[in-house]
Length: 117
Length: 116
Image (cartoon, rainbow over all chains, first blue to last red; front, side):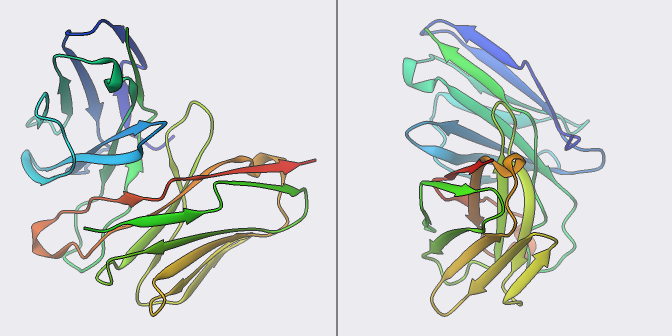
């Protein structure tokens, strides 16, 4: 158990709908990352938040958005869903930066499996 | 941007044999290289990582080597066991610096099957 929790575990919805995925990072971790895992694209970085602020963006679609709340949990919002959005969505968190050059270890949650019908 | 290539895509070994998975990266500024193991229905789990200031790191049956000149790094698993069967991902990331950013760029994954 990594200490990162994600809800829901599974989500089935229809095209055009909007869903919200939730992530709670490990206790004390300020950084939260979202990744998408699909069969054809592999594991892809979507977005990172650090202490409530967006810090890095990957190939995240404009239909997708995220935020990190004062209690450090994060939500990933997916709207106008398409069949191709069906994938596993992972959240990861990492310890506070030590101020050095190296990335801190990212700990992944169990994921949310999204199926768009 | 960074690109990570991973080979092979599938690997089948007999129990007790060694397994080697290789990755190459494109950005010479990358300095942190973790390896993750993903079992069916679960999230990726870190098994070992290496920073660019060392060439090799070992943890029991698992070792990782890094060749910065050639820009490749490898995962070595010795005395494989059936429970090692899973998908393994390599990843790379560039210096964090003061911006506290740290996106991981993943390889495509290797499905390892250890036959009893």
